[in-house]
Image (cartoon, rainbow, N blue to C red):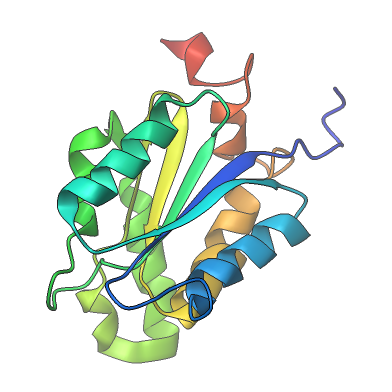
Length: 176
């Protein structure tokens, strides 16, 4: 395939919330709308309560599914209540993408100031699947997608991108 054609990825979206349902899940829907507008495919969208083991079970299933190349989560990255996304996801990662959280917080600082330090968003790679955990606010999902993920999940972005790590024949499978 030509390097000039964007290769669509199969992306799963997980909303982590004790209170949201499909009708009120604006953050998850924002991610779905943006990934589809960018030319990617929605593999699946789910909502689970903020429970370490329920979150981990869904994401582990997607990591094991060859049909899912990217997992995006929204919610559960703060310090309040039952926020437990980092605790659920971190044990599943083969490698952490340290720069994702750092860059997200830098960009978020422009929008919400020092409150950004309360975001424990993270990224990583597991079984040739990239995983990005975003805060639960719609604004945070817009920032994460528009300012980081849109480029990093585009196979044409140079000098490097995460898309090429999950596309068969281009990615982590070839680098061992």
